[in-house]
Image 1 (spheres, rainbow, N blue to C red):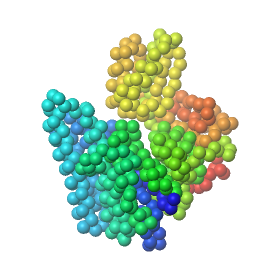
Image 2: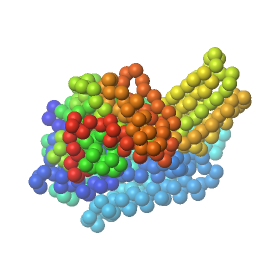
Image 3: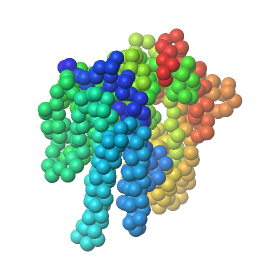
Image 4: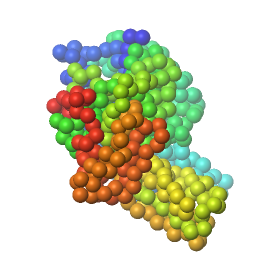
Length: 473
């Protein structure tokens, strides 16, 4: 175990040109013994699929819901232009820019021809487009990761680093192989001691990564690569240290690097949309006994935050984060004592692929706090109105601020948090704490999320037990 496997996320990839002399080199010498898994440049997957937060249609959504050809063709053109614009900023040499442009044009036009052929095929009654949608989603996703990995390889080669583009996207590949086989075959002749593999975050495989993980696939590829190659450590590079709150909210001088936490906290962060790592990717690393570290890509001398299975030595709040949500409330006076309401609501949310963040209920009301768009929630409401015509069903934009730690027992986080919020002159719409004492959630009006996170951080994070973030953050 002499190498590390390291992942670079999309936002960090967009600043790739800043990392050459810090992340990939040390004192002018290439840093080998490392494998890098890269995501698409920031915003590209949104253009290829749909916007992750707003739900605005990208190529996939436009194609899947197309009334005519113009929408998805135009969306594909916008994605191509955005890719070219990005690598023109990242690359310096005209020859490299030309190669990157030719590469992405070939991939985009290949995808366009594929979609045209599929559309023509499905014009016949024996073929149904909906049976191919998952494959289309995977095809389009792979375009973003192939582009970023290829561009990174060109940049590193130009700077004297022996980098190799490792394409796991299965482009024009007629084989149907498992994820492990795809990775093992691609890495078979690579020697990380003398070359730097730049691996696509998307991997085409028989299992179909997007079927289970959707846009979390790059972390699955990352974790399997680390496990299969026996990595010494798995490292995730982000724009900031994993800290007690977003430094942009509470200030770089107030946010503290966590330094050490566990996978339980990582799971809670994932639930709040602030993924340190996908829970199933974390499971792969745990089972392979590969340690995980989250670091600031722009502060390479700092060891970052170690994530393992160890419990806390003492009770402490570690991080405050938040998420805008929509509260789907179902009220029916006759609900009390009747079984089946909750199951029917869950079925509707699952059918429309709505992610549940939290939930509360009483005798006649069930409220789900969900991470979705109002457009999708309107469809859920329509289904539920047909099922329960006497119920009052409403959707309301709110936000959840969450205080998270390995062990919050004995800290009175709930009461202290509510008091701190009230002291600032506003109130929580709701609050909840589970018996495991790993997180406490405060529901507030959507416009009050940033203020709530700052208030809770100032009141509940013990400064003496945390180390100040580097000024780089």
